[in-house]
Amino acid sequence: MHSLAAKLNETLQRENPHVFAMLSDLGKLIYFPKEGILSQSAEAKAKGHKYNATIGIALENGQPMHLDVIQSTLSAYNPKDLYEYAPPAGKPELRAAWRKKMIEEHPSLADKTFGNPIVTNALTHGLSVVADLFAGPGDAVILPDKNWENYELTFSIRRGAELVYYPLYNADMKFNAAGLRDAILAQKEKGKAIVVLNFPNNPTGYTPGIEEGKQIVAALKEAAEAGINIVAVTDDAYFSLFFEDSMRESLFAELCGLHPRVLPVKVDGATKEEYVWGFRVGFITYGAANDAVLAALEQKTLGIIRATISSGPHPSQTFVLHALNAPEFQAQKQEKFEIMKRRANRVKELLDSGRFDDAWTYYPFNSGYFMCLKLKTVNAEELRTHLLEKYGVGTIALGDTDLRIAFSCIEEEQIEDLFNLVYSGVKDLQGQQ
Image: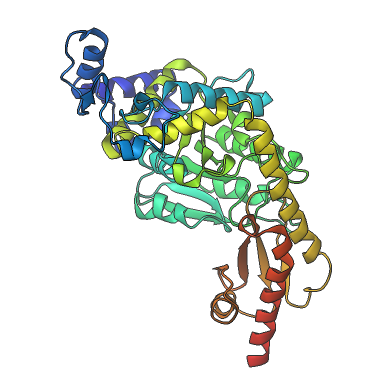
């Protein structure tokens, strides 16, 4: 084991041995090199006032070398904010701006201890970092039965973890906090669980209410008090898109400082929140009781980033930073929110009209990009392929009965036609039975 990794491990063992025990074998071995190309380049950048012949970029006339065919379309930006490598942790100004945004959107964070957001190559990369640091063969990753399929690739296929499912909804069609609690407590013998909390949920578009949120926090605390170390991952991909009564803050805020055996990890990003899917700018933020633990986790995270992508794209970080600092940002974001809310409300209005009750029910939704139908009479995959072939309508089949529909990408005036076509598809298949 490298001496730097050993030193980070010693810090975690001293400051919070529960967090150290959460690390995977890779998580224990990883470190961010303090010596070598990066550190020598940083020293040369600070002191090499005559010539700096260290970093692998090309300079011309004191600026990063660039092509006019690219710069001419980006003339509003200084070349140094586009072409140079971004630091492995991301642009410092962007990290500070995202942290400020987090505090503004989460009043509960005001008196909590949490780290500086680290820039990732969007949310999938952030989740992959979590998997690398904390998940290994046999570790339990606890998920609702309705979840994003990429979790399986990220935690199970890549890292060998065991996926443990519980029903997302209880009998009252509320969040199943009791099922979550039981799934975590079932890991008592292992002594460790990775819990993924994704709200608004993909695929259902459901976010728990305030009381349900309290039940989730209580379930994690009970499990921690029972001696289970919990990596509590809040996948906040669709954060802020809350259209009805629900929690308005990520559970990350409530989990910070909850218990020494609970490590909150917030994975979020500009991807969905700021409608910049192709920019690939995400963040990973840790909550811990002291700065030494946060510093050690940051160094290990930077080690994973350095070993995989080296650093995230600089231009998109610059673009997101520009947006966050723009005076028009909040007004423009609110405008898009209202469009999304109207689409969600139109979907619910149609589904509650009774016109389609013989064909499906729907799972509760109140946020995000999606909703899910529960088909009564036909198979979801058969309906999906039929809709494509006959009507040119794309949907996502999940299991035998569930059909996910992304209202986010359908204009409000087209939503009724979309559901009429889905209904026609159901009727077509019923006629073939």
